[in-house]
Length: 173
Image (cartoon, rainbow, N blue to C red; front, top):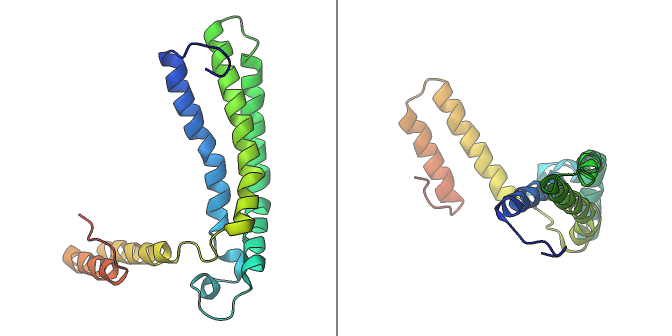
């Protein structure tokens, strides 16, 4: 639509696919932002003890995420953009359009994942991302471990129910 094309079925499906693909760049960066490694372990993540000030914690988390995933994200985007660049010059219109859409979406996604997203995380990113999810993961892993050890399954499900109740989550069905 922006390029003056009529949006057909193939273009609509491809656009949905490319936008879904583009979100993964930002997800990788934010996933590593939520990791507790850069700020000194789980005591800081859970909000206990004397952790670093807010700006320093956000800076450490953002720098860790960009150091760990920035080059891989940029490389993945560069290979995708490089492959789609050659599709732009195809003689078949469908390949031209798919290549153009993929190229535009990939360049925009890499830009968003590596420039405004880290700036937003530095400015107002969460200080303690995911402690409830980490507790839930421990409960679920413990539930899985108990069922693998041959304990009766009801014992594991009771443990999961207790854990969910303690975290104010609805019972899983």
